[in-house]
Amino acid sequence: MLEKLNQFSPKALFQKLRDGLNKTRESFVGKISKLFSIFKKIDDEFWDELEEIMIAADVGVTTTEKLMDKLKDKVKKEKIKEPPEVLEALKEDLAEIMRGKGGELAKSDDGVTVIVAVGVNGTGKTTSIAKLTHRLKSEGHKVLLAAADTFRAAAIDQLQIWANRLGVDLIKHKDGSDPAAVCFDALSAAKARHCDYCIIDTAGRLHSKANLMEELRKVRKVIAREVPDAPHETLLVLDATTGQNALLQAKTFAELIDVSGIVLTKLDGTAKGGIVIAIADELSIPVKFIGLGEKLEDLRVFDPMEFLNALFESGEKTENS
Picture 1: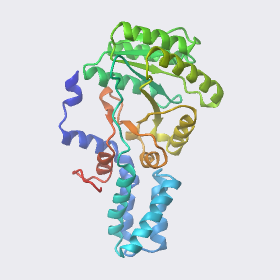
Picture 2: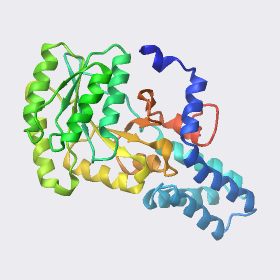
Picture 3: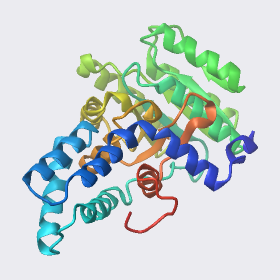
Picture 4: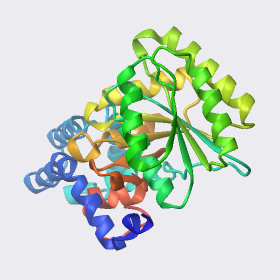
C-alpha cells in the first residue's frame, strides 16, 4: 500500500492541499485581496476591515490583535503607504508565527512505540486513528490498536470495523470495562507480537473533567509501567470546523494531560482554517497532522510553510511567505 501514499508528485500533493483549503482561502485571503483592491490608502477603516476578516476566519482575537499591532508598527517604521505592501508584511508575520510549529511523529528507539489518542466525541478521533494506522502500515510498520474508550460501546464497534478493514489486531474488552486493563492487555500483546506501534483510543468526556483526569492518569500509569518512556505521543484530535471551540478544547486538555501533538481534522470542510494560525500562536503544542478528506490517504503530515503557501496560492516554498 506504500504506493498509495506516494503515487502523487509533490506538485499534485501541493495542489491537493491547496484544494483542501479552498473554503478558508475564499473567506480569508479572498476577502483580504478584495480589501486591498478597494482601499487606496491605509487608514482606520482599512485596519478595522482587515481585523474583522481575520477574526471571521477564526484566527482568533488574541492572535489577530497581536498581528494587527505588529503590522501597524511595521507600516509606521517602514513608511508603508500602499495596501498591497501590507499583505506582504502580513505573510511575513504569519510565517514567523507558523515556523517550527509542525513536528514529526515520535518513535521509540527500542521496542513498541505507544501513541495515545485523546479528544472529545465527534472530532473524528477514531477515523484519524484509522488513517494514522493506514499511513504507518503503508510505511511497512506493524500496528496494534487498543479500544480503551470503553465508555461508549459504539466507539469499540467502530474501531473493530476499522481494524478489520485495515487488517490489524484490536485489543478490546466489554463496554464499561476498565480502560487501564485494556491498555495492559494491548501493550502485552503488542510486545509479544513484536508490533512497531500500539495506538490507544481513549475517552474524551470533558463534561466530567475529574473522571476523565483520573481515567487518563491510570491509563498513563499502566503504559509507563509496561513500556519505559511511554506514551511516546499523546495526540489530541480537534475538529477544525468548530473554530475557536477547538482552541478551547486544546487548552482544556493541555491543562489535564501532557499533549505532545495535535491532529486537526476536517480542514477541507471549513472556512475557519485560520484556527491553525491561532493554535500555532497560542499553544506550545505542534500540529502534526491535518485531515483533508474522508479517504484513508487524506491524513497529511503538517508542514507550516507549505500550509501558508497553499493558503496564499504560492506555488513555491519561500522562507518568508
